[in-house]
Length: 478
Ligand SMILES: C[S@@+](CC[C@H](N)C(=O)[O-])C[C@H]1O[C@@H](n2cnc3c(N)ncnc32)[C@H](O)[C@@H]1O
Image (tube, rainbow, N blue to C red):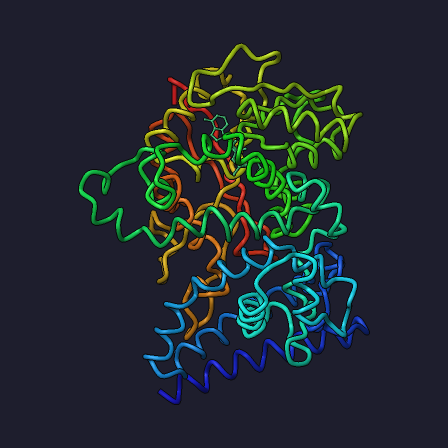
């Protein structure tokens, strides 16, 4: 057993040595956990986004988290894991009463909890304990007894807006923000309410095998029959609906910027090509592509309420791109309407992971019906890997760009350092009966819907990020 500890320590040492040497070479310090996140975190220039550093971080985090599991007494480890649900609920609580905005201007010296509650009226004892619990998990700092300040993680919960502006207009709290706060707030609010009911769904014979969008843990948690999408459209959830759309901008920050442009040869498409952004949300990806190829035409398809928000968003953020954009409010589980142009690309980011297999087949089948032999299907969603080695020549190996496994004794998928797809899979299971898919599941899904998987493209600097999955129509002559 000490052999395992020594191997993990070696990986940790090597990864920190690499980071220190890159910092020295760049003559830069590594960002301190006690300091609010610097905007460079979200740009390719940020030190964490340096490919060498990104790889060292992945190895270091994988080794450190495996070390925690290996070192701790098992009872302490399992108890702490069972308590993890307290973190999102306390993130949601602190965010709901706007602590991140209230304490911002107090900077490093922090704000006493009795001062914080003068703004938001929260119960002082409860809020103090919630913030101390979060500080224990490195979200906020308790800089002196009962005095709390931001650190790097809590700073992402700050919209950057003035407290009074939020109180005057709570529905628009997340508008014109980078979406990170919206993303964290969404994950820790309606989504985290659903997970605790997974066991109840598994044990309920009336819905255990369901693939319906409204027979999930979310309906158990909120005691309703609405799907997530219908729930977000309820008048009383207007702020949650807007927050969801803006959160999709925040989620983009998890990938190095420019990844989508780099992963596909958009210049190989003809002049004035038509990109149909299926389930576009506000069209964050289309806007990124439009900035590089202003000649392209974009058709944004989403639920009518979202398309209305998308139009508002484009007219504010990219009025010029509006001239090449068409907005279609529809239900993409119905046949495609007559499109204004022949589609060169159907683009689906984070769409199929929201659909159980039956509905995903329906959606892809509708797209296949209106595709020409030249239409490409480009999907951005995870390809879930096994937590064990896969032989290169097996049908479980992922075609396209290689994705090196983590070295032994780390888990091959980097464990906690690569946990994002597996966490997302549980989100999909919980609130939509949907899933993240393995390569085999992708191949089968595409095949039964009339598409052939061609390749999977990855950003080598970001193995745990979303790959781009390229498919072509199966022709009757194939
Ligand atoms: C996870 S979001 C992704 C948004 C966008 N593709 C992006 O990456 O920013 C999924 C989107 O699918 C849309 N959607 C879900 N079911 C739909 C349906 N039946 N018809 C049309 N749009 C739908 C939602 O409104 C939401 O905007």
